[in-house]
Image (cartoon, rainbow, N blue to C red; front, top):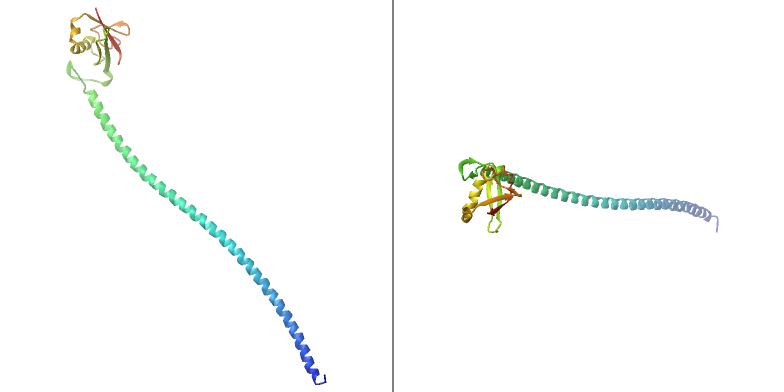
Length: 199
């Protein structure tokens, strides 16, 4: 090499130094960019994970919302049914009151066969059961506590005429019944058995 080549050599050396420096700068810049890229990748991955969690939570919340909507719909149906049931119960209660009044009116207006104008209280009405020793009579009669036993006996004879011709005694709970005393005075209660005894 001659002296003319010396400046070229210096230029090449300077260029190589500059190139090495540029190369180092580029490598450093590349490292920085790679680090930044890795940071963005990590951040992106974290955001994806967070997004997935949010989607899961959103799905759970949507499911809960659907469940609550179903519950509300069911409650609305129940409420409608309850309102219809309440209306039906109210109507039935009114009907029961009307029927109770009719029944009570009928009970009060039961007329004693001996006195057509007498109004009877339901508590005074009883049922007695006649049984004959010969077992030919087994018959129940409605009467009032205030009826004399003779009145009730007459009702029995209307059904069993043949016993009118006999001398009969009647007993209830082992005691002899007095004909001209009231049912209540003879201590006869509702559904008591009265035994007819022929002499």
